Image 1 (spheres, rainbow, N blue to C red):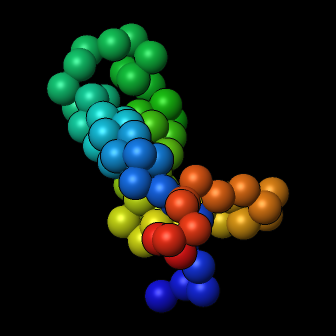
Image 2: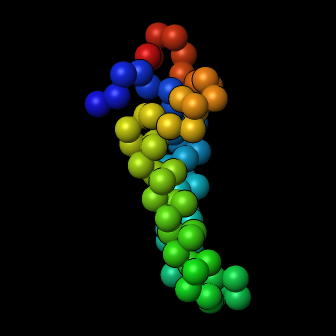
Image 3: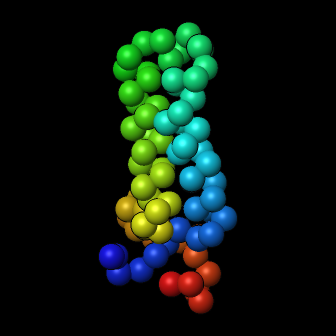
Length: 75
């Protein structure tokens, strides 16, 4: 899909776990921070971005700063 992958395996796992947590937890936990609608939707949006970048193995922010967590063999 993209020219080169820049999200490595360990980074993918962290992004998937954190992304799913940010998507699910506002609905499960009754934390006062997530009671406001903007905070809840911000959490969901950030979680969705993390999850999506893990699925496609490409992070636009990494591309902008020239970073990569991939091994050379997986590119």
